[in-house]
Length: 215
Image (cartoon, rainbow, N blue to C red):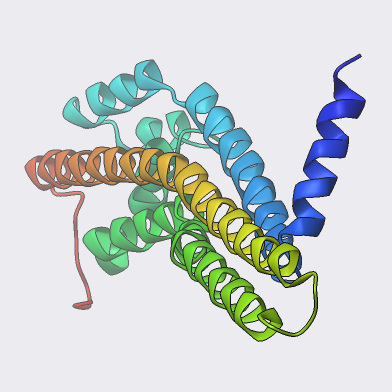
């Protein structure tokens, strides 16, 4: 029963916020889409992590079973295991280089849209500030123009406040998940680097890391 009322209030605020509310609305929709896409992406990644499989690959490499380790890491959904598989398959050129390339690809996918979220955090308050300026300008231009100048002045101030609040709200609402995704990305980067170092150490012990050309 309260949904129509809330919708009417939202529409009323949108109209009173002035024309700057349209770009703010576009930014809001984009921010929501990015948040949903990234949330589902990270949920899928967390579900695909396979620490037991990773330990099995380590144990096999420690025992010197290169072929078995390649087989164990094949087709994994875990980005760390995928990186190891890529490095083991390209060890004859440069295992370290292959691991770095694979890790870079995983981090690129994990960091997708983070720059866009950072742009939203910066852009939204600026759009709100622009709405503030245009609203105040409208208030000043209406002073003394008619008997309804007071209503126009208060309308311009209201437009300025609504636009500012909307811009700040979007920025705050985007900043929190963006920082969370950055922390997840940093944790994944640490896991990839630690796994790459472990594989290189184990490979060096058994002479798997043969390099025929320097990367």
